[in-house]
Image 1 (tube, helix red, strand yellow):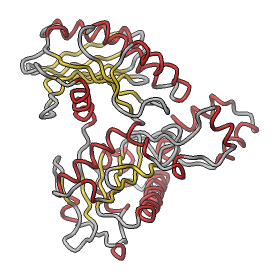
Image 2 (image 1 turned 30 degrees about the horizontal axis):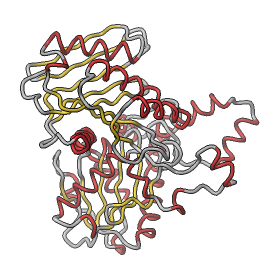
Image 3 (image 1 turned 90 degrees about the vertical axis):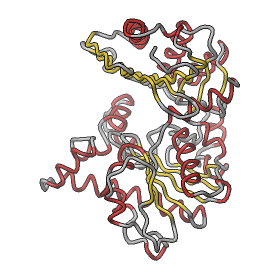
Length: 400
């Protein structure tokens, strides 16, 4: 694939409309190659492959995930070495939903693939695409171990009072309805990095992790174990997101259905046309803040709703944990947006949470402290690296 790839893990994230892949060294986290396949199924798709000697890009029709992955294999062989000759020791697959079946990294065989497919009812946009990614990667690299790492796994430790919905228990059991949580790989990685940054034992810390991107989630972590998280049965619950509504009164769904909207229309509304996009017309945070700066009232309201919901979850988790040692921001918005970090923690000095304005505004891509010296609670920004976490998990499992 490229020089320096020996001993690396190929990490594959086969999503609903795009596929990301990266060759990661499990000891250092450094990437020697990466790529993106996007606009799958559209008239013109795009494949981008970054490698040590440059960039290869194609604009072609990509019929489906299988075709896209095959094209990537061809491009990799064209500009470097074929995948089978790249010195890859394992393939790590990000799988969105493990249900109650999978809660730790798992060696993939035919039975595991079938089980992941069977869980598609819980993640119809994601698990089928995950399965295709596994199938093609196994065809391309049949003699290398493949490992599934589940987005829901870290939240398997949620206590029953946090994971249980207050609906008829028989119905819940029959349909596997409970709160599963998502972004687990990121929350686990970031909470561990926060402890390392502070030089503290993970088991000693009460943490709140805020993964803020186009998708957004919060978690409460006690001693390295998750006790609550904002996402639930699906990634739709919780915080306001780029295009997802987050929490809504379930009665809203019933009202819309009785008013003539079909289930698929409501699904599309809440997942793709709500959140920041539904309120302001844009889902990119930079575009939102530009509109706010221009005096756009809808954008200003969208920002206020976003921060209001975020503060509600922070407050709830402070109570659940009985106090917090560290609050960490991560994800595209969490790592880069000064305003969100400032406003979500504003006025909390009585709770021992004080953000230092200069530290918050410092331009850095490294893990860093943004709390004031007098703050009892440490406030950090820690870049997430799910690919590194998946690579480490794969290597630890297969023992290479």
